[in-house]
Image: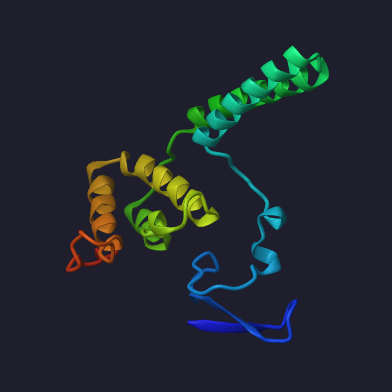
Amino acid sequence: MTTKKSTQHTNKPMLFYYTQRDWNRVVGYGTVPEERKLENMKISEISTDLLARYKTKAAADASEADKAGDYARGDKRFSGITRATNKQFANDAKGPKSMTLPEFWDLLDKHDWTYMMSDGMSPQYVKGKEEREELKRYAELSPEHAELFSAFAKWGQRFIPGQNPEAQKPERPE
């Protein structure tokens, strides 16, 4: 585990605790580093679930705007709904690509299996949920993929109360 000191906004240094593997797994409290702030991150893909939630909220806002006589805002929302629908169709057409078992094992190993222990709709929770949905799609490629996913899920959740603390990490297939 690495530590990093900061004197931002106070005279007292604050400690940040991060795992060595990746910055998303914050163990302690402190100010979020500049490179980890959401507004500085680029989003390359948007999940179908997120697009559906946007469409629902945009439709409600468009209706309110039309009732209030703000037709420009209503038109803007409906064009956003159209773009979101097109993106959903594109996501559905992609489907899971083929992946070897060792590549799938690497993805499973990097996944944060305890994301559901994060607070509410925190970025860690949202990212973990979206990653798990993608991993589930890859698990449908073959029975071997599904078995590997199941074994990793048991291993990854061994620290959650009520789960099997004796679960072993699966061996990497060759």
